[in-house]
Image 1 (cartoon, rainbow, N blue to C red):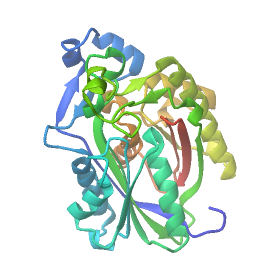
Image 2: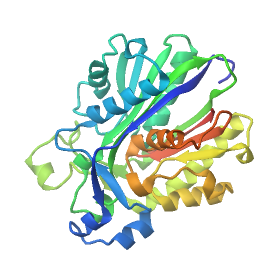
Image 3: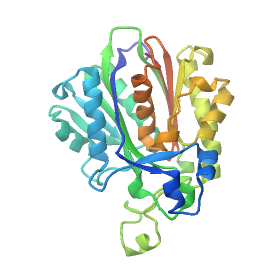
Image 4: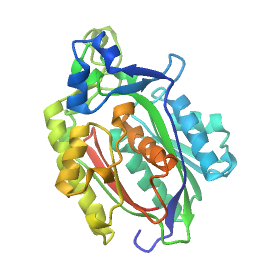
Length: 329
């Protein structure tokens, strides 16, 4: 991190809603098949929030588990960032609701919206604030309830998305481990690839936009697919180069869980064996900003990640946005 104080992940946590929606369930809802979904996406099932659960509820659960994992009290947290594009409401920030829920009363709290890249963007912001000495203990959460923004009549998108939350606790570290470097990018020229057109200041909620189903997620699949492979491959190489490392040094790549074919194509471009890619899309679907912290926590819980491992997180999302982070565990 260019001579600054280095930050490290000292705890992880995740939460998936209890309700599971399988491909068989979707076969009864739209014109699709389990075989088509698995072949095209790698997804077998996804979790769906209950009617009384919102993004802040999922985030609160993941945050509490991350704090427990880190052996850190909520009162010690002085920065909370929630990466989400499906907040509880336009205002206040979902992070403020989480702050109140976990009783982290001295924490600064705000949301960050960079779609599926939000978690890596948030890590970068928090890492730099800790490195500068302004804050000491940060709680970074990726959380989404995308099921509320899915058009369940659109078979091309409704099979992809799920709900969930993942979180990490960051602190300064005197050791040589921690977050080594970041690479972030954006291109608003691709804003049309993935969007929820209505509900903001451009198209406020009204009967017309609802009747036109403009308050639901829309995606141009082919353009998104190609851009994701290109930009996640490039971002991984770029962050490794900045860190003075190579693909051969990587123990695990944790990519955004958008589509198994994208992840496999990225692995091929990087000449990285598939057993070095953390993949959980089969049981979680695409949870946008939550995919990477959920996959990271699951890998930690399963004992896959060991001290000294080099981990690369890499993502791509609406915006367009993309980014990567190299971590020495």
